[in-house]
Amino acid sequence: MAVHSHHHRGQSGTTYLSAAAARAEADKRDAATVQKIINEVLSSPSIQGENGATMTFAKETRDLLIECCVEFITMLSSEANEIAEKDAKKTIACEHITKALEELGFADYVPELVAVADQFKNSQVSRERKQTKIEQSGMSNEELIKAQEELFRSAGEKYNSVPS
Image 1 (cartoon, rainbow, N blue to C red):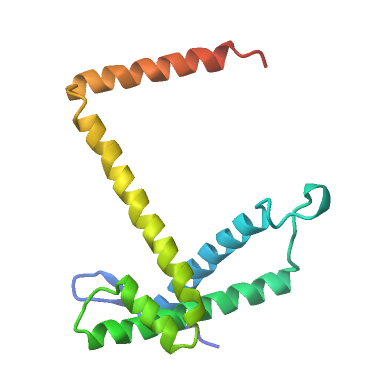
Image 2: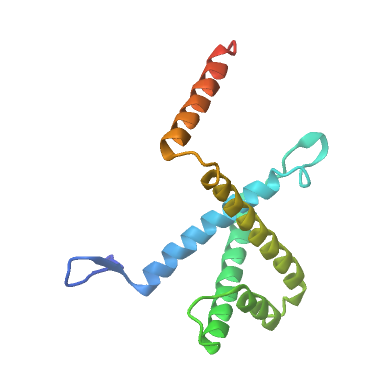
């Protein structure tokens, strides 16, 4: 049985993935992301059983959950993309996701999504403020580097002085 590559070479020698291969790679990334989320959720205190025991999934159950999540993400992304295209937008925005959830019958998720999106926006604003504090410190780059090096040296001394 012959194995066919999903890679194609362009005239410049650049390798391009076929649409199917690109989708498969995206699915792998999505699955890895979902796996990471599952691990974080299962290790959170709200999910732990008696005596702090961490819950686990049987491999088949975990794989099925990941497959369902990836399918849901794909379906939601496709619907949101169609909505964005109808709005003549090239970038999917939060309102496209919320509308897609509503159209797919998941309107109950919209308030939580909006709350998380607002939290994210607020965290980005505070991150920008922290960057601004450094800029407003009045210190030159050289002074900032010296201060950072002093902090590293101090942390290293503390670390090395702790008995093992």
